[in-house]
Structures are given as C-alpha cells and as structure tokens.
Length: 271
Image 1 (cartoon, rainbow, N blue to C red):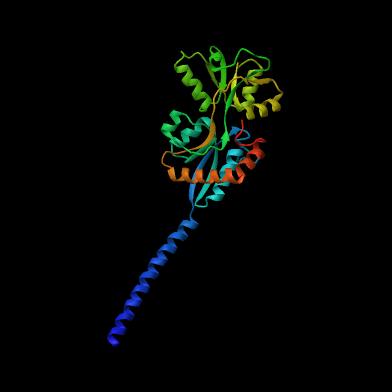
Image 2: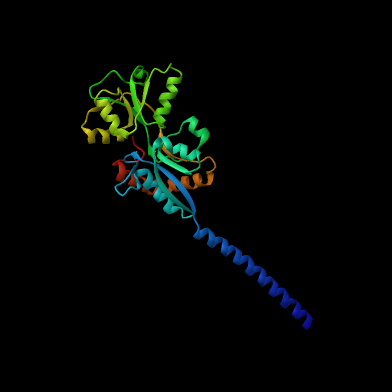
C-alpha cells in the first residue's frame, strides 16, 4: 500500500512540474509579446499639406499620419516610428528596406502593385481633375495636354499616368516635375510657366483659396478616379491585414470621418 501511495505521489509531483513548466513558458511568451512590440518604420511625405507635411516642431504631421497614429493605438503589437521623406524617395526607401510602410495619399496602379503591397481598405477619396489658369477653356481632357507643359510631383501617380500616356503618344505631353508642392504648381500656372496641373477637388480649393484664386478646375471630366491607400513592403501581409481590420473599425465607428474633417474639412469618402 505504501509503495502505491509513493508511486502516485511521485506521479503527481512530476505532472505538476510539467504543468508549471508549460505555464511558465506560455507566460514568458505572452509577456515577451506584450512588452516588445514590433517596430515599424513609416515614411511620410514631407510637403503635401494637409495630408503629409512637417509641422512647426519638425515632426511628420497631417491626415495620413493622424490616421496611422490611431491605427497604431489600436494595434499595440506594433510601434510605428515616423520619418519625413520627400515623395520621390518614398518608394525608393521601401525598395531599400529602410521603411516598411509609406504614405502620401498613394494610389494603386499596375506597376506599383507588382512591386508593393497595398492595404485593401482605402482611407480617402482621391479622384483628380485638371487645373488651369482662371478663364482658360481649351483644356478639358488628357488629350488636350498635347504640346502643353503639365506640372506634377516626381514619383506621384499623376506622373505615372502622364508618363504612360506619353509612351503610347510619342511623348506629346511636356511633363514638368515640380519640387515644391502645390504652391509651386499654383504659381507656375498663374504665371504661364505651366499650362496645367492635376489636383483633387479638396487640394484645389485649399490651394486656390490660400494663394489668391487664380485657378480654375475642370468640372467636365475626371483626370483619374481613385482612392488613397497605405503602401507596404511586399512581404508585410500580416501588417496589411491588421491595418485593414482597424480601418474598417474606424470607418464603422466614425473615427475616420472625424479625422478627415479635422484635417481636410470634409469627409474622407467624398471628392
């Protein structure tokens, strides 16, 4: 009888030790997961107010950054670290693995989708229209830009559309890559150095109001119909899926609309 009691006692001790070991391992893993969020390097454009710009404290700011900060607040397994990068270098930074996520109201196009991963959820309407000097009526569509000077940011989707058009139309459009954002486009169009530019209706209104009302927007036709998405390195499928989940939540609970009104004075899903 004593031998049997001793045998079962030893079994209980061994089982307890094994359970304690497993529990400790799980607790350690959970603790490590909770205390060491994965750091994500985020590149944000530097000169595209109100979406991505550098604020008075020399920090990345704007609607895109505010949306990402709210996403990160809801995804504690990550720690987003922000840096401002000029638009033409944003995708190059993704290529060089200096960042894992980039933002400046990026639109999808086939070339980009071959190289990068986009969120499935957009976070801003990004329909664009042609912009001309006030009173000008000879430019209505992309075909009307033949022989004209058109300003755009290097690395932008507008540039990609114009470049693709030129490939099949004997380079008829004179593409001018503008370095200093919408203020430079405004100034160059008003003073005749450019014939046209391309902007969303929101950007046009903001720019035109800020610099004197010297531009008109082409209402007859859209230049392109699109949404803005976050763009990631090709292997970041889990991060993309997590961001998509939170963006859906933010749309449903009104947070995305609130941020959009705060930065753009309009809802995220209207032109």
